[in-house]
Length: 257
Ligand SMILES: C[S@@+](CC[C@H](N)C(=O)[O-])C[C@H]1O[C@@H](n2cnc3c(N)ncnc32)[C@H](O)[C@@H]1O
Image (cartoon, rainbow, N blue to C red; front, side, top):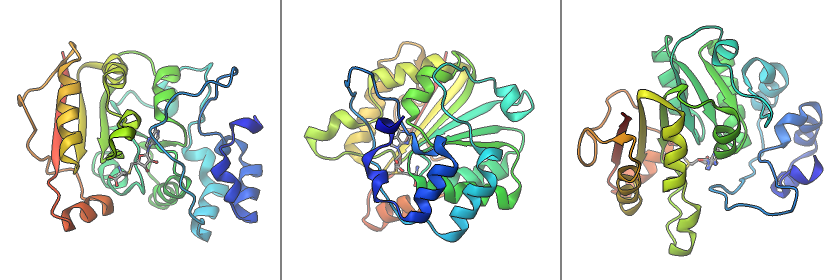
């Protein structure tokens, strides 16, 4: 288990280390291969000192809201959410601003938010527990591995990928989340009629998203290009920063046929 704790976590305060001892599942954010081979990751773990409310939320509510990664277990959404409502998965929810607002506005849809950033994870956990949300669950793990290992094919109604890390330098493009193998993975997990909704303020990545989705035979783009803005998607802090720099927001919406 030790070698699965990413080294960025070693920069934690004593209190945060105490949390990881209390909730060891929280320290593990990816599955390493036994032969030491590591695939390219779409994220770098950022450490940020947790505030008291986040520590309290982790101690008191982790097990109410968290789904723990287990490579030998497949997700039973009915058991997780206690109903058969549609499930939408958000990948990389950051601070969880959109996640919380969307989940509150749609009590008849279940949301599973996946994020590796502990600060954001515990902030959303605190907000969700304050509001007593029943239709939201969270995971602190590499979303690619969660989808591949735990999510059943044709079980998901939608995917939200809002402002994925743009990895602007050319030599980093290989770290971008939205690439053909990942889009194929998302498509395989979608029910017929389900959607993938991606948003970015990085023009060239937006174009890549369109191109990638067009290469997946089971996906259809009803707009033929960028999609109109969804009124129901709330603006996030990350998005506001882009807008301040006059970046254009592009939306990509595709559906499973
Ligand atoms: C640029 S931020 C955007 C956050 C948020 N969606 C927003 O709009 O404000 C991208 C987030 O994706 C997360 N992320 C990247 N790759 C991930 C992965 N494979 N699994 C889980 N989270 C990931 C990062 O930790 C980061 O917080």
